Image (cartoon, rainbow, N blue to C red; front, side):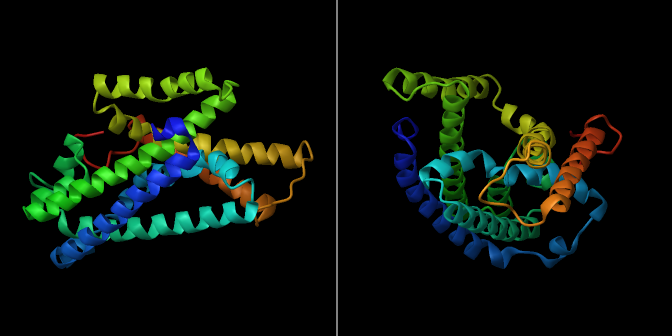
Length: 275
């Protein structure tokens, strides 16, 4: 309903659930911090670190909402840059604290360990509930997961709806909005009802072959072609010039190549026996 009504209504309801997300997150951190085991935190196998890059990329794959934000902020470049900077840094800080808490509490092995949870497709909140066996923590974790899913769903949905409207040239009249709404929600709903694990399976490929290509490599190539081949000029330029642009292109290609090597079996998976 809120996505159908438009960006303004999504903004209002999203603020409500973001408040719930922040409150539940702070409560989770408060109750979980005393249970962190230093031995778990100190465990590190750095050779596996590159294998997480693709998954980390999906966590910062918010670029799909930038066109929607651009229209919502009336193409104010300063406000848009500020939103991206604050949003990215906030997300990074939240992820770092969350990783510290989960990796400090959840063991590698066992029924509620990381390996078993990965194989079953469990999220971190569920594993934490199983390890600690505390009803209050479990309830807060469910609230946290719910708010996280809703806020993500709203942002991705409004972005997809705007993307379809722009790409398919569908007007925002009542019929057009209904068509956009159906195209946004019916295919994903069908996939999830057919295969509930499809989302997790897609994440294995979305990191490199989705996020990195669509939101990393292609935009850089578009900017490079527009700036140095077609001579386009714009009011705003990111710092770094051609070296920064080439570095971003090279880094994207490196991630794609690494992920390809993992998928074809040239590099051993992180958890043996799984993919």
